[in-house]
Length: 321
Ligand code: F6P
Image (cartoon, rainbow, N blue to C red; front, side):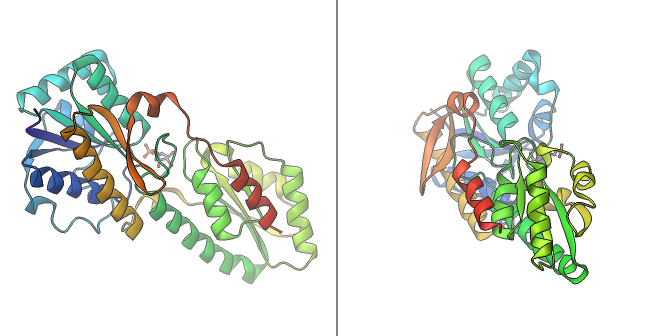
């Protein structure tokens, strides 16, 4: 029987992680569990950075970006000995199950802990990349997307004033989700993502047509995993009429106060993960399917790839006239 749970955040931070920590702690306490917070992800676990969390310790954190528990990317944890050392520390602290909030690497770590050491785990998807299979949305994606479009809106103001075209690089690692959705919401002329081949000659012709029709700006959104924006800029330069500039949005996309959607998603999936443990589902991730919280086996999360919608990709091209 689960009496004490631990919670950690791991990998890249994302806005809304705090809402999910708060939900894990408060839902857990509501159900009679004791909750420990592990500082700095799997690295902190290996250093036994474990503290008790009560109702008050998660007060006032919901509206803050980042993660109050801090996070890390740990190489040592990925080894067989690192996992067995972590399991020993979990047991020594009397922790019966671990809630892991993070992206795909973090979910893989949780599954290793379960498979190699039999530690019950529950995952919560949090990553601005939205690249995890098993959930329609990961925590942080909505906020990052809003940051992307607010930057695009600002860039368009200056682009239109000087009749320029901009290439805007957005984050996402190997995923084109932020770029595609940012391109649709930001009204981009073209979107370049790793999932689909880009035809630069076609993009160049489209921008040129826009210039000749009198458009005052052009916008190409490029996913970071889809190629070097400066090289794309070089290719387009002098072919499209517009003067070209490149903006790499970078880490601003990971920060800032979480949107209402991410606070609610964090709250729902945080409580769903604890519920999974109470129901003896010991190797699952809490995901969002439609408007329902669902438990997805971690094996499926890691074995399958999240597919970027081809129809939305086509829609982006149709609307970008
Ligand atoms: O996974 C989130 C993310 O921000 C990616 O979009 C990006 O490629 C990566 O993390 C950057 O990693 P780091 O924080 O280690 O530089």
